[in-house]
Image (cartoon, rainbow, N blue to C red):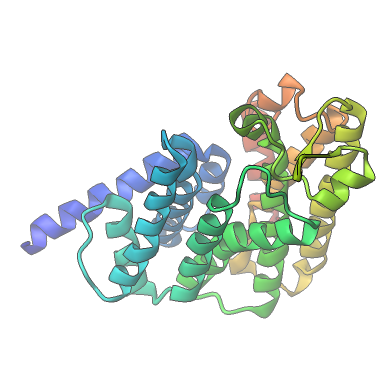
Length: 303
């Protein structure tokens, strides 16, 4: 491949990444637009990778096919670091980003391996504790922030700690929002831990199998409130670090804004994840209002 052809392929690959993020992860798409121009290419490639692995199980007609897709990405990461060419636009973009910014292989592996472990769970295999879901959120969401910081040459322990909390908050909030979808697809609330479900009278056991009952809407709302409170606590911890976080890291940490918006939307509907208002606009608020919130935080240098 000559230089001109390679450059054209890379441009197409990065354009594809932007389109994927805009189509499937719109609130984070808007966040990435607030980054300095020199950081956006890497950020969009990393976020597109997250989109691709996040939807692997949802777009597959058979769970086995979805799992195979995730394993393909696990193997692709190894090939990227071995400098082997992979004919996939997101893989091409990632390869360029890894080569230019020396992105940690461990973060990419950790992200896709968490998706694989989640995909291998049986439908009635419910996480025992909220801590398990916090780890899943960190592995799939915080890692993207770690790598974005790394791609921008931002080496800050405070920023990493804030990113950890923001990723956990974002991941937990999005899992709560997706509960109705997963319930309709698998007829299971697979992301409510058994300890939380048991506390609120939602845990059922039938023939050796464990499940979550949705007959008690009040119990479900109470369980969602408990988990949302954990997510909110992570946002508070992230913001408590704000004075020690370098200014150049703040735009990377803007995903704290959509996490807070979603938690506020849940509060307005009394933590009823089935309330249709949650599906309106961007995370339950009008798109223009969401963009204004994001712009305000960006302008003020806050997250």
